Image 1 (tube, rainbow, N blue to C red):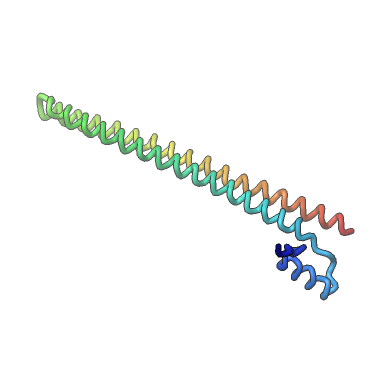
Image 2 (cartoon, helix red, strand yellow; image 1 turned 135 degrees about the horizontal axis):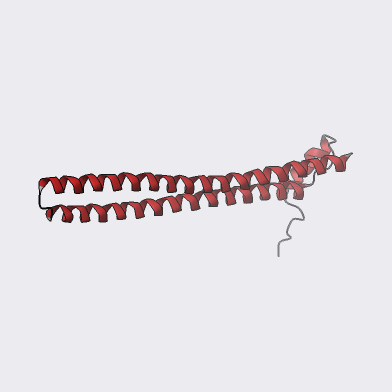
Length: 143
Protein backbone atom coordinates (compact mmCIF):
# COMPACT_ATOMS: atom_id res chain seq x y z
CA UNK A 1 0.00 0.00 0.00
CA UNK A 2 1.37 3.40 -0.95
CA UNK A 3 2.10 5.77 1.88
CA UNK A 4 -0.08 8.88 1.87
CA UNK A 5 1.91 12.13 2.10
CA UNK A 6 1.72 13.83 5.49
CA UNK A 7 0.92 17.28 4.14
CA UNK A 8 -0.67 18.70 1.05
CA UNK A 9 2.14 19.49 -1.44
CA UNK A 10 0.50 22.82 -2.29
CA UNK A 11 0.38 23.82 1.39
CA UNK A 12 3.93 22.59 1.93
CA UNK A 13 5.10 24.70 -0.99
CA UNK A 14 3.68 27.88 0.54
CA UNK A 15 4.96 27.02 4.00
CA UNK A 16 8.47 26.43 2.64
CA UNK A 17 8.26 29.63 0.59
CA UNK A 18 7.29 31.60 3.72
CA UNK A 19 10.16 30.08 5.72
CA UNK A 20 12.65 30.84 2.95
CA UNK A 21 11.56 34.47 2.99
CA UNK A 22 11.67 34.44 6.80
CA UNK A 23 8.01 35.40 6.95
CA UNK A 24 5.97 34.68 10.06
CA UNK A 25 4.17 31.33 10.07
CA UNK A 26 1.07 31.02 7.98
CA UNK A 27 -2.09 29.43 9.38
CA UNK A 28 -3.27 27.65 6.25
CA UNK A 29 -6.36 26.25 7.95
CA UNK A 30 -7.43 29.75 8.99
CA UNK A 31 -7.01 30.95 5.41
CA UNK A 32 -9.03 28.02 4.08
CA UNK A 33 -11.76 28.63 6.68
CA UNK A 34 -11.84 32.30 5.71
CA UNK A 35 -12.35 31.49 2.03
CA UNK A 36 -14.88 28.76 2.83
CA UNK A 37 -16.95 31.34 4.73
CA UNK A 38 -16.67 33.71 1.76
CA UNK A 39 -17.92 31.05 -0.64
CA UNK A 40 -20.77 30.13 1.71
CA UNK A 41 -21.83 33.78 1.87
CA UNK A 42 -21.70 34.04 -1.92
CA UNK A 43 -23.79 30.89 -2.21
CA UNK A 44 -26.42 32.22 0.23
CA UNK A 45 -26.49 35.52 -1.65
CA UNK A 46 -26.91 33.76 -5.00
CA UNK A 47 -29.66 31.56 -3.53
CA UNK A 48 -31.55 34.63 -2.31
CA UNK A 49 -31.22 36.24 -5.74
CA UNK A 50 -32.33 33.07 -7.53
CA UNK A 51 -35.29 32.71 -5.21
CA UNK A 52 -36.31 36.27 -5.98
CA UNK A 53 -35.98 35.64 -9.71
CA UNK A 54 -38.17 32.54 -9.41
CA UNK A 55 -40.78 34.51 -7.48
CA UNK A 56 -40.77 37.23 -10.13
CA UNK A 57 -41.15 34.68 -12.92
CA UNK A 58 -44.04 32.99 -11.08
CA UNK A 59 -45.75 36.36 -10.56
CA UNK A 60 -45.30 37.26 -14.23
CA UNK A 61 -46.73 33.89 -15.28
CA UNK A 62 -49.77 34.50 -13.03
CA UNK A 63 -50.15 38.00 -14.46
CA UNK A 64 -50.08 36.67 -18.02
CA UNK A 65 -52.65 33.97 -17.24
CA UNK A 66 -54.96 36.50 -15.57
CA UNK A 67 -54.59 38.88 -18.51
CA UNK A 68 -55.49 36.12 -20.96
CA UNK A 69 -58.59 35.25 -18.91
CA UNK A 70 -59.64 38.90 -18.83
CA UNK A 71 -59.14 39.33 -22.58
CA UNK A 72 -61.21 36.21 -23.24
CA UNK A 73 -63.96 37.42 -20.91
CA UNK A 74 -63.92 40.87 -22.53
CA UNK A 75 -64.22 39.39 -26.02
CA UNK A 76 -67.21 37.29 -24.94
CA UNK A 77 -68.68 40.29 -23.14
CA UNK A 78 -68.41 42.45 -26.28
CA UNK A 79 -70.44 39.95 -28.28
CA UNK A 80 -73.36 40.45 -25.94
CA UNK A 81 -73.18 44.25 -26.10
CA UNK A 82 -76.44 45.64 -27.44
CA UNK A 83 -75.30 48.95 -28.85
CA UNK A 84 -72.03 50.40 -30.08
CA UNK A 85 -72.11 52.82 -27.11
CA UNK A 86 -72.39 49.93 -24.67
CA UNK A 87 -69.52 48.10 -26.41
CA UNK A 88 -67.40 51.24 -26.19
CA UNK A 89 -68.19 51.62 -22.48
CA UNK A 90 -67.19 48.01 -21.86
CA UNK A 91 -63.89 48.51 -23.71
CA UNK A 92 -63.15 51.66 -21.72
CA UNK A 93 -63.93 49.82 -18.49
CA UNK A 94 -61.66 46.95 -19.55
CA UNK A 95 -58.84 49.35 -20.42
CA UNK A 96 -59.18 51.11 -17.04
CA UNK A 97 -59.14 47.82 -15.09
CA UNK A 98 -56.19 46.56 -17.16
CA UNK A 99 -54.19 49.70 -16.44
CA UNK A 100 -54.95 49.48 -12.71
CA UNK A 101 -53.91 45.81 -12.62
CA UNK A 102 -50.71 46.59 -14.55
CA UNK A 103 -49.75 49.27 -12.01
CA UNK A 104 -50.58 46.94 -9.12
CA UNK A 105 -48.64 44.03 -10.64
CA UNK A 106 -45.63 46.21 -11.41
CA UNK A 107 -45.60 47.35 -7.80
CA UNK A 108 -45.73 43.75 -6.57
CA UNK A 109 -42.90 42.66 -8.89
CA UNK A 110 -40.85 45.64 -7.71
CA UNK A 111 -41.37 44.65 -4.08
CA UNK A 112 -40.30 41.07 -4.79
CA UNK A 113 -37.15 42.30 -6.55
CA UNK A 114 -36.40 44.73 -3.74
CA UNK A 115 -36.83 42.05 -1.08
CA UNK A 116 -34.58 39.50 -2.80
CA UNK A 117 -31.96 42.16 -3.54
CA UNK A 118 -32.00 43.31 0.06
CA UNK A 119 -31.61 39.73 1.32
CA UNK A 120 -28.75 39.09 -1.07
CA UNK A 121 -26.89 42.26 -0.13
CA UNK A 122 -27.50 41.70 3.59
CA UNK A 123 -25.81 38.28 3.44
CA UNK A 124 -22.75 39.84 1.80
CA UNK A 125 -22.75 42.82 4.17
CA UNK A 126 -22.82 40.48 7.17
CA UNK A 127 -19.87 38.51 5.77
CA UNK A 128 -17.88 41.69 5.19
CA UNK A 129 -18.57 42.73 8.78
CA UNK A 130 -17.41 39.33 10.03
CA UNK A 131 -14.27 39.55 7.87
CA UNK A 132 -13.40 42.92 9.35
CA UNK A 133 -13.76 41.49 12.85
CA UNK A 134 -11.55 38.53 11.89
CA UNK A 135 -8.91 40.89 10.54
CA UNK A 136 -9.02 43.02 13.70
CA UNK A 137 -8.77 39.93 15.90
CA UNK A 138 -5.81 38.63 13.88
CA UNK A 139 -4.10 42.00 14.07
CA UNK A 140 -4.66 42.23 17.83
CA UNK A 141 -3.34 38.68 18.29
CA UNK A 142 -0.09 39.62 16.52
CA UNK A 143 0.58 42.58 18.83
